Image 1: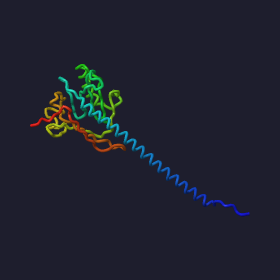
Image 2: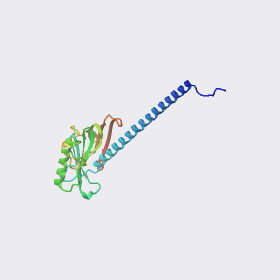
Image 3: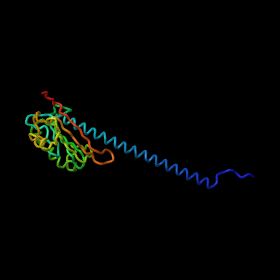
Length: 221
């Protein structure tokens, strides 16, 4: 009888080794693709969150309102406080909003709608107190929103055609940046926000955003 054709043991072992190597390479490729997709999704989510935060920043500044004997803007190096119109229901009054850097997170706080001067004064004070303990467990998290991880931030005012640090001698002319700004004529022409994003796996580097006061007009000589 003729010997039946088949694979030798060595051929089987070689084929098994090749298949195992191909499976390993395929798994590494799929794992690399999965990691890249996860990193891309995290970066996309971080970018969207930051964009929403920056949009809210501009909205707060655009909605800034100047009322009699009521500061519209105050920056003390820690927290930026703004008196703004309530957008959803202008008849509901105004709100006090505040922005600060807390525990490595760019953070926003807002008050309830206000219609009385004493209620506004209390909310203005509460915003300052909040900035000293923002991001901690004992704060009122219902009014607090974490925007994005940030290492540092600076604010500049634009006046008379030039940018200067809001706490410098130029930026604080007429006590701008040191005392609350009330009259519309005393408001800066623009505000520049510079944030240094935290070194994580999503977004890095510095970002600058300029805001121009909607009511600002250039006086022609």
